[in-house]
Amino acid sequence: MSPEDAARLAGLLHAARQEGRLVDLPADARLPATPEEAYQVQAEIVRLSGEDIRGWKVTALKEEDRAAYGGTRPVAGPLLSGWVFPAPAEVQLSRFVAPLLECEFAFLLGRDLPPRETPYTLEEIADAVAALIPAFEIADGRVRPDAPGALRLADSMGNGAFIPGSPVTDWRALDRAGPVTLHIGGIEIETGSGARILGDPLKAVQHLANAQPLCAPLLAGQTVTTGTATMPVRLERAGRVEADFGAVGRGEMGVR
Picture 1 (cartoon, rainbow, N blue to C red):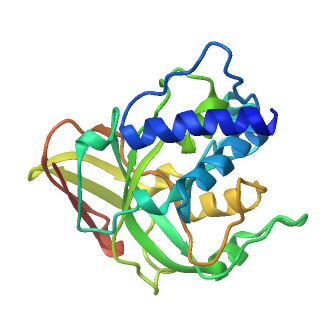
Picture 2 (cartoon, rainbow, N blue to C red):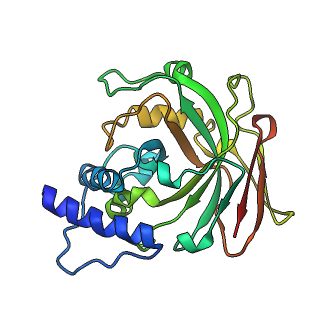
């Protein structure tokens, strides 16, 4: 994928996100076919936005899911600063195309995790983590759900917004596989578990660190959100959203 093709697609995806709509792709648009080409586009979107990368959302943690993205390793999309809203946040549905709410365990990095030939161990990842955060992700795409995986990856891996709760620094002994209960408008909607993410969501950070390079480095101060502990729920109306992550804490936000 040429730099010109990547820049053109990035401009289209960036505009669609700012306007809360599906992207209108010209018939002659060159689309990414591999994670590397998708990361070219992501890097251009970051440049166009002028925003900081506050973190990463990781997916394709299981080997059988990776071929859909044109590669053989986990993949990730950047969480841009203009779309990160610390809890208790108020988010507007009109900013999104087809928003899905996900409850996620996220990890704040306390040190850089540069690419290296020797794989990171889980203990090294734990040593690099400064805090565990209960969080919401609003997943949203500017391309259709049935679009090729590499195109969905280029579109910030379908990130709409990220709503982190309060960081917990003394996190190692906390139950990360315990139940997570989601309430919307005071009604229990869904119960899930961190065990959905490889048995322990910390392993998702390890997988990501060993899947570099991404569109940018993994740096101290960034947050890695590890995948949904609950089934994704369509956000369709205004209301108060709360999630109980047990000993890890709570997430809350308003939707209007």
